[in-house]
Image (cartoon, rainbow, N blue to C red; front, side, top):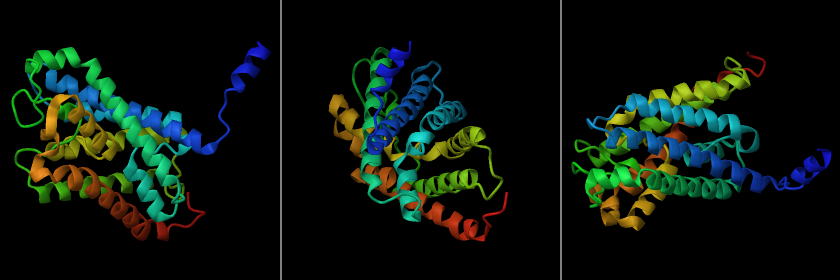
Length: 273
């Protein structure tokens, strides 16, 4: 038994960068996979009805699992918005952004592929084998990536993503900053679960459960590769994927981070509990 432990320990990765990369990739994979699968249940079930509360609950549960598993290794970001926001605040070295982003986007891409394969038969029955991205009765690309609702302008999508990602980062920092209520570490993942579930439920109408570019750009690329075509890039004159799916969430995250820092964090004493 002792020899087996020695053999297993020999596989332990010593390089901290690789550890962080693997943790972020696996964590993002779990988060995006559960989110996609929860959306698939809503879209492909009959009668067709989207329950954002159910999607929020499932995705929040996945985040809770990711944080329990990954926080000691990488911080459990599992979202480029979180990583860039912490870099902007100086809580994470700038050079780490590269392997964190790469891990998160790879994890999101792999999760999209697995979710699609897992529901391939159901998708084919639903759309008759004719893939349509968005805005048709049999469109299914929304299972894999975000898109704006029929009613939403590009400006509305930008505001929506800035607002919800800003609240995401504000909420995260309120929870993890020990100078506030000093949330016990084992309870932090549960609080994050409630936060994400609440935000998806509150903001799910306009762009679905967005909040994470790792579920947008990689998934859109995968959908384009497997036959959904250029339609996956087309919403709002091919601008939504870039502005609503990538730029606006990062802007919102940074604004929310600095709003917390300037409005709350600077005014807390280190001794406060």
